[in-house]
Image 1: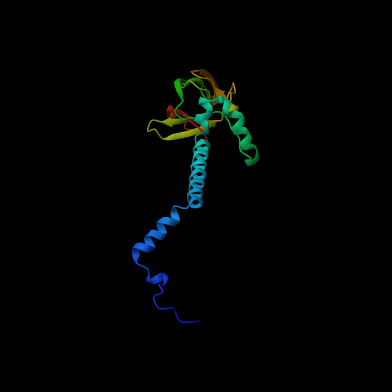
Image 2 (image 1 turned 90 degrees about the horizontal axis):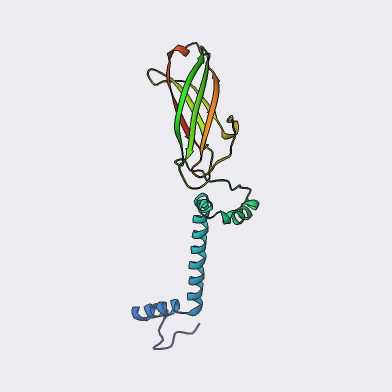
Length: 185
């Protein structure tokens, strides 16, 4: 390899302002700008898709017409799109536990959907407690196990339920109250 010609400038010998100018010029090329714009649009689209997927219950409650689009996306993924599952939407309006016989009880309650959209029916947990608020027995009913099964509760709907219970626990006389919890498994 011949020796460099006198006065030749190597890339490492360039002044800093020339290297900075070359770098700025590289970012100004149209293909670099188009590539960055395409990447930004792709990432923004992926972020929007992720937000639409995570917030699908709220979106479907507000715009039910989106249901076919979500069902189409869900089909190849093996998922399902159901009614909105909002833990704060359904409340117990009232409940009472009545003793019918020494070991028989009747549990009545009314659930109410507080929202203006249809929501999934929650699971119901009844816990019988003693005087120290210690759990004696728990029972969970899924919506399909209710006396009047329903998968959803309409907007502002009230849903009365009545359960007949047998409680022949040896410590049944210690029972002094109950707790009701609504949840989505």
